[in-house]
Every structure is written in C-alpha cells, then in structure tokens.
Length: 57
Image (tube, rainbow, N blue to C red; front, side, top):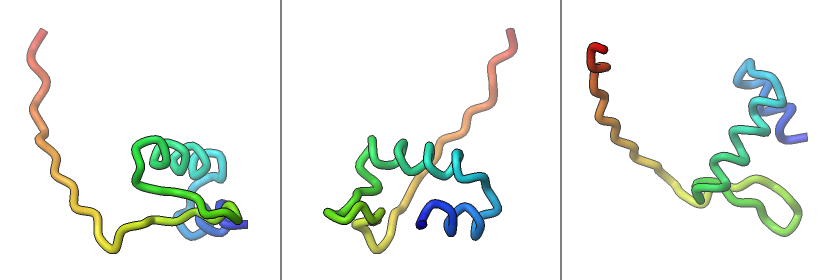
C-alpha cells in the first residue's frame, strides 16, 4: 500500500498523507493512473513564497 509506505518513510500518519495527496490532486500536482497509483507528472517542481509578517492588531 503506497500511502502506508509513504507515511512510514515520512514518519507521518496515513490519514495525513491521504489528505495531503488529495489536496495535491485538487491543484494538479499529483495524479493517479488507471491502476490507482499516485504519480507526480513532473521531474521538478519549483515554488516561491512571499512571507509577510502579521500586521499588529
């Protein structure tokens, strides 16, 4: 079972891995093939974050 092996490798619970996989599928970063195997159709993913401090209340 992919999710179990992946969760063990990441030291995370299966439920969290399942939730994360579905979130990544919703935005198109992860897909499933006809057998239900999870695939990442990219050789590299580059991300950029702009972190702004919270404004004082």
